[in-house]
Image (cartoon, rainbow, N blue to C red; front, side, top):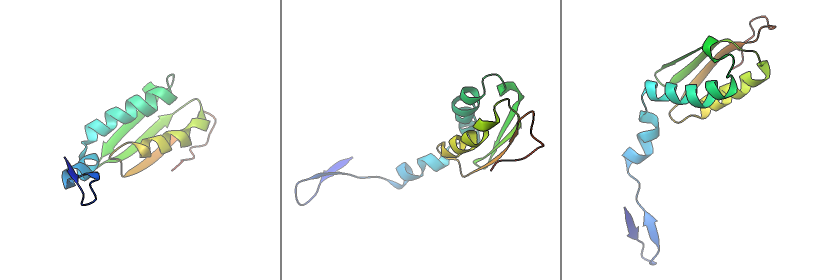
Length: 102
C-alpha cells in the first residue's frame, strides 16, 4: 500500500507481517533452499554424503566433502538464507582430521 506524505512524495507502508515473514519460514522451506542453493551447487559430487538438518531455523550440515575450501563458503551461504538464525557446519574433507568450521 502506498500513501502520499505531506510534501507530496509517495511512501510505502510496511506491516509487521511483512517484516516478520522472513523469520516465519518453516524449517522444511529453509532446508529446501539450503539444499538447492548451497549443497547441490557447491558440492555436486559429494552432495549425497551431506546431511542437512534444520530445527527451529538453525541449520546443521554434517558429512564429508571433496573440496574442503568450500566448507566456509557453505556455512556463510547457509547463514544468508532467509529465516536462518544459526548454522552449525561440521563438514569435513577426506584428508582432514575432523576439524569443524563454524
